Length: 455
Image (cartoon, rainbow, N blue to C red; front, side, top):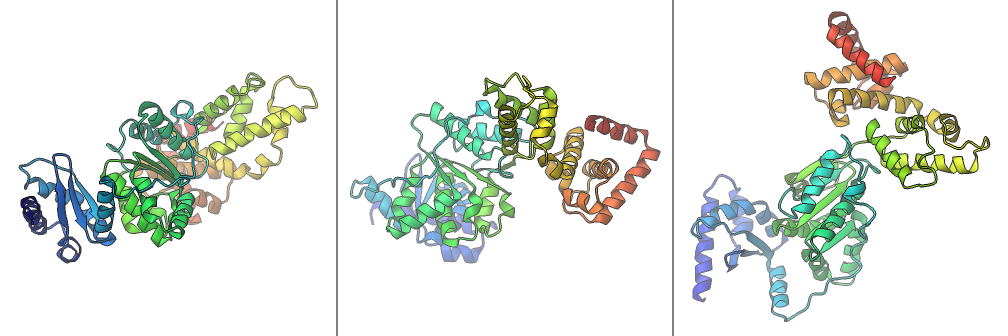
């Protein structure tokens, strides 16, 4: 053993003992998985620690910050980040660094290309998406330093992929030397399966390890696939631990992805989770105006009341708004039998005949809920949640009451639209509102204000 090896052994042994003596780690897990770890390299910028296998790597990763805190005491109070490798990955790393082997970057792993037409400049902002936009923009300007990972969730068609493309485009513009990988959840599964078949898993991992920015769309598709999640966790942990930015989208929160391993959910929650909701009325109008601005032939030929009509009835997501515009223009060009020189509300009603009628109740309830949320500055998730605090319960009761009063909607249907609540809950809410209207003038004024907005 060389003097330097002896030095590494001594300071790491003291670090292990210091961590063991805390009440922040399970001693059985420590003895089984962490006591055999070794410090193999050290300089001013990095300490490299190796562990036996993947389970050891996963557990060590969970306690990485704790080890860094106690390692600092052994190196004169200087913070030195720790990088963790399995023994197998470390051998590959050393051979690659010494030129003994060349681990190639596999081609065609990443099934998505960054769409240059989707950027922060043409992402329409509103209350429904501003948090996600601000978080994505911050990550793009501070790769790996804040909000890592960034997890954006929401229903399909609300702009999650647009934000991933926006991050990729901004990084490409501002940091020309940064390596970016863009992949879907299904693409990851397929590429990993091919790599396993071709016996090149190490090359597969290395293709990700070399990235500065990883964009993953629809991560929920890897749920229920244990080996795929094991490899993803290894890649994900390496990137985040080494200050490489990871941005992820899904159609639900990490905790709601059934079949996703707890350790992955925990790491997702360690970063920043932000959601995108259905666009509110004002944002829907802006989206429609932007879509029409790109069509020179008709951009000045659509009445404002037509835009209001579409925003009211098709604002469940951006794709629905785009589809409605396409339908309207198709009808105007091919079935404008009265030879109107602009698109009127009458023509729009004809174009969407049947579509709006079928969705009338659902969309009307949605509109009531949105207007109430806007009035009280709440999100859709808040008003549908189980939260019973006064600032949320009162708006929820008012929204239910107005759905009953203005739409005569069934109690069961109203309950479903407000977090799957029982019909008796809706009845009770309506009765409470009726009582408060009689007692509190401020309460009556709020309801009148909301009704005016609805009209």
